[in-house]
Image (cartoon, rainbow, N blue to C red; front, side):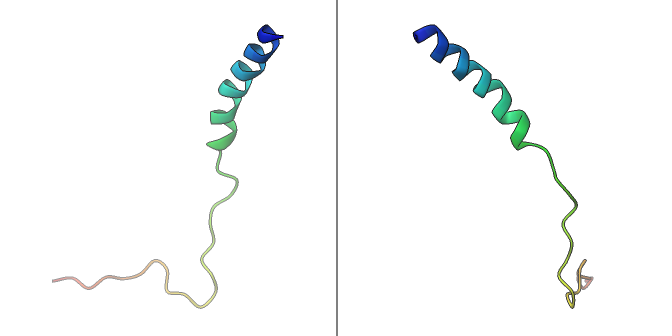
Length: 42
């Protein structure tokens, strides 16, 4: 029983960071916004 829990915890510990780091798509700016913003120069 304890061995099964350790195996499951190990698998989740290895898979969770890999599943969380992927970017699904590039973010799109909402319509009507000025992005990227042009900042004034000194």
